[in-house]
Image 1 (tube, rainbow, N blue to C red):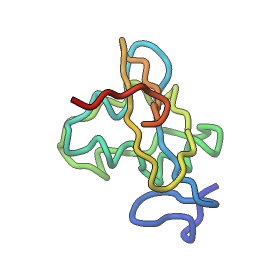
Image 2: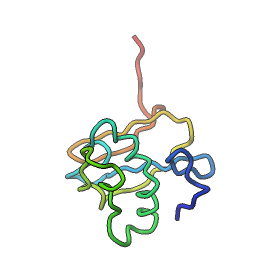
Image 3: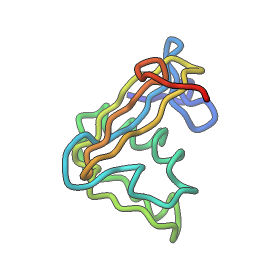
Length: 113
C-alpha cells in the first residue's frame, strides 16, 4: 500500500524505483489513450498505484474528480500493472492494439545519425 512518505512529486518511489502504471491487456491502453497533457500523470498516479497494489479491490478511483474534463479513457484500468523502474531511467510506453508495455531505453537498439 502507498503511504505519504512514498509519494514524491506525484510519483510513488521505493528503494530507488518509481512505480510506472501500464495496461498490458489488448483492447484499451491506459496512459497512451489519454490527452498528451495527462499521459505522464496517468503513468505515475499514486492513487491508481495504491489501487493496483491493493489488488484492485473496491471501485475504480474517480479520475474525473482528479483530472477534470481532460480526455482519458479508463477502459484499460482493469488490466493495470506496475513496473518498477530505476529512478532516472529513460523509458517509454509502447502501445499496440491497446496493449501497453514499458520499454527501457537500454533495452532497445538505437542508431545515431
